Amino acid sequence: MAVSTDLEGTERTKNWSDIAQFIQEAGIYGLAVELLALIFELTMTDETHVADVHRVSQVCTQWRRIAHGTPRLWIRPLRVNLYSASNAKGDNAAVCLRAWLARSAPLCVRVSFKQALPGTIHRGVMEAALAAAPRLRAVQLQTMPTTPAWLVKRLAQCALDSLEELDLGMVAADLTAEAEADAEPTPFAVPALRTLHMINLGTLQISVPWPQLTELTFECDSLDIIFEVLRQGAPHLVTASIAVLGESELSPEHCVPVHFGHLRTLSLRFRADLSPFLDHLTAPLLTTLRLTLHLAHWDCEPLAACSPPASCPGCTTWPCTTEPCPAVTFWQT
Image (tube, rainbow, N blue to C red; front, top):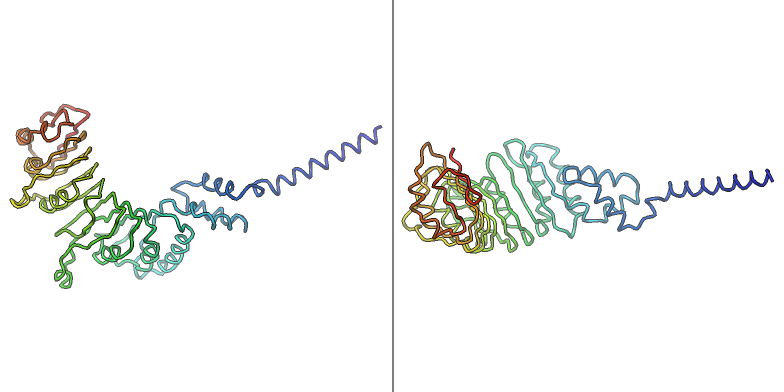
């Protein structure tokens, strides 16, 4: 009996050992590819996804094959360093970027370009990204000191069919003789564009389908240009943030009323008298108005003269008082 019990115990131990070894060896490897890919995706974060996906790819051949064959693992927001033209790292970065974007196909991606130091940009890195232009959902440019005119024109030449968000940073006028001979704004064909952020210096630098925008952040040193943009983009804007750089005045030919049919939130930053601007705006659905006036002294009377209840009935309280209210926020700097 004792011998029989020992044999049964030995057999049971062997079976559990085999099962444990199977679980250890097969375990996660036995999962369906779709489930394994989902596990990979859930372990990644926007901040560490580049390192995360490479770490997964290095575990074994099977995981590398699954990772490389799962486009959604490669579509989180991508921050790209725009190396200087003389930096040898730029060549390697361009190769890596092309490979990364190829693995995300056919899905759309969001890319942010940042230039750490002023100087010429390594065009190979930019061209690697623009090779995937039809799949770019969002593009942000952070170049120093301003976004080069050639870069704006190169971007406009691409088929940006899926682009919904565009941040051009600070775009200044190209002062070269060739550019001055052709001073027309650079046209962008962006059928899906809804959000635009840019700082425009000098004449209007770009032309986009303004009426289709729902969100606009626009800074400019010309009140005339701002009104030109607002007149075109007013129909569907829901959120707008406008800043007038310097003490610009509105020309008589631009004193045309602008009606915002859908505008809910409006932020304004001025260094000059605000009343001429507000006199020409109507926004019946406006619920939030934020004002920042860069003036040493200000007077409520010009604001009161704008008859805000008629032009913006949604704003139940107008900033003719410093009392806080949920509909209107007023800053003085």
